[in-house]
Image (cartoon, rainbow, N blue to C red; front, top):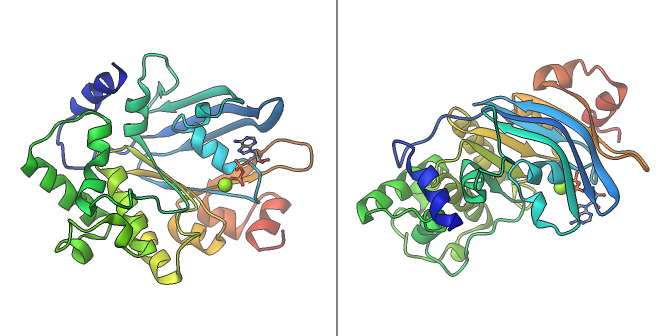
Length: 277
Ligand code: ADP
Ligand code: MG
């Protein structure tokens, strides 16, 4: 029983409610296909523990595909194929002995469109992941997890008096922070975020950016963003992806965000970060 086995791996870790050590994620020569169409070509990137790595580049260059490969969502697409390795703290997440539930608990994902379970209470949204991984906890342990995760997601003060209200009743920005809290409940070492602010207004975007910066000390974050100001505000490191007609997505340049923005090594990076694309 996969879900049970995965839960054991998750449960064995100490400090149920608190954060886990941030993990270092490393992609080695990752290539990806949909059918016979190659969309990523030997992408290698280290995303260091406790840092924010931004994936930037034009639409269609494979950023979302790369992000999904980092938590084994790519394999859900029937036509998808994959080569290369993804290591979390040196361990291959595609090793057949690693359960999917374990990989997903250690590497969480937040999407562009906030997707809380709309009819489910705020409280139950946060604890939903614990149930999916088969983890059983007492009511007071769950209360602690809900408070700590909502606090870390920057939402506790706004919702602490109405935890029984449905998640769908919150504003878009609050729903996104609820999704972040839900991801945090299983104590991920890495949080992947695919354009988490693209559907949000500027105020909500600011709140999410603050949350990202605060989380970064104990969760490794990989964020896809089209917004260059956002990339420069929230990220420590950047990777610039590019695919040109007929060629699959590759990383043109990666490194410290400050250096990428102030003195890009490749003309194409310079053009992109300066909005000339
Ligand atoms: P980005 O996030 O950078 O915009 P994507 O990773 O979404 O890029 O897409 C990379 C390429 O893979 C695109 O050409 C896209 O059309 C293709 N693609 C993405 N998802 C699928 C899918 N499920 N089936 C077939 N092709 C896909
Ligand atoms: Mg995308």
